[in-house]
Image 1: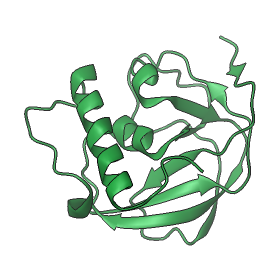
Image 2 (image 1 turned 90 degrees about the vertical axis):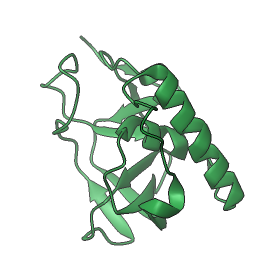
Image 3 (image 1 turned 45 degrees about the vertical axis):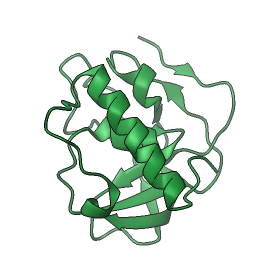
Image 4 (image 1 turned 135 degrees about the vertical axis):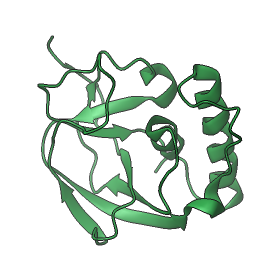
Length: 147
């Protein structure tokens, strides 16, 4: 299947728990280690979202102790993913070229969100609940959802 480009260049976000990433990081496309069985295994990509809440929703379970939020340094061309069951909730996009990201914020997990166990993030209801809680946290802490 051919990738469909997003019409407008935009800034995109990516989150990580890596302790080795610095304030500026070049990411190279790769096939994610964790993706659904339906997602293509032959397309190297950087998974991103157009808003921060989408990143947290796409990651699902928050096993990370420390989380860093990165944004593309410049506006870039993204592509619409396919075979990603929750893309309408997460607003996930793919970057297929090496891309420079800049760190905008770091958090301890327990400062961000406490997700009750009954919210399974594998359900769309759980994902929407997580997305709404993340948005409230970001607004409360005066962090822009979008650039």
